[in-house]
Amino acid sequence: MNITPETNRQHVSRDNLKTYLRMIDTIFGIDTILSGADDKTAVAKYYKESHPAYRLLHSSKGAVHMALSDDGTFSKEDYIRQSEFVGHIIRKRSCRSVLELGSGNGYNSIYLAHRYPDVRFTGIDLTPVHVRDSRRRSKTLNNVQFFEDDFENPNLTSNSYDLIFAVESLCHSFDLETVLAQAARMLKKGGMIVIFDELSKINPEVLDHDMRTAAELVITSMAVGKERTKDVFMKALYDADFENVTIEDLSENIMPNLLRLQYYSLHFFKRPVRAKIITALLPYHMVQNAVAGLLMPFTVEQKIHGYFRITAEKKGNLSYSSD
Image 1 (cartoon, helix red, strand yellow):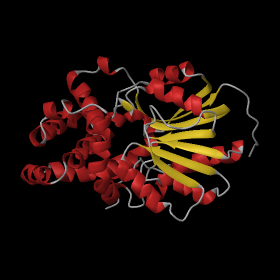
Image 2 (tube, rainbow, N blue to C red):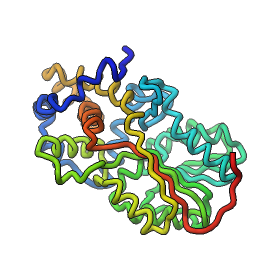
Image 3 (cartoon, one colour):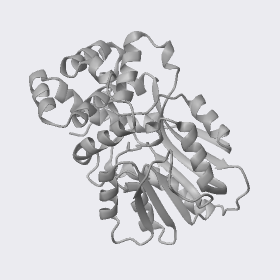
């Protein structure tokens, strides 16, 4: 079924929130979800257990991020939009060395490595299954390599990269300031960082109980390290010695993808007995993705969460070509 905002937008109404929370509490227990582990081990476990679900419902080609749709309709081709923007920066700035933080299954770096054979790409990820899959997918390429590493404490050389990018991975960091400081260390002077990620549009403390619970469930069910606002993120960039920071709200572009995933989540929740059996049989984090699938279209529609593209430069001068 082709799910579009026109056919499914009614499900993100504020009037549905209590129903959604009741459904989640029946299957999982809200308190159980919110009391889950909150550390790097939980992040790696989340992605390991979610690996098959991402391939089945998200992208069989390895993308573990949101598709960016410009026309209001989801298309699998929209998973390449983040990579296309990074490619634009590579061309504009004549980059020769590029690092991806939290490279997942290698979707973005492999896509770029095919198109820019003279550029050296490196991807690091915390999850072993991701690194193995990335290496398998890239075995015919000689300009990309993947390592198991922690972007809060990477074992990589300083002043080595023209460009660093991260697609929906820095949200999993527990110490954003350290991650950005490490990125600045690894970038050459004047190098650029490009980030696509979810951020809070408002301080969650001002939300009422149900709205706050929905926001917390989205964050926890996706193993997000810490909820951050745009202002907090931008301050962290400036404190890490970045300048020329820009931020663009792409929240509406991810809605077709979110509504598609919500469609599947609603089918899961509408039969509680079957849902409980599935939850008992399959890995917990895999099934728990249904919580974010159900609620994230709501929190984005209600302007609690947003999806942003952020760019910044390490202080210094770097010459680059124009398009």
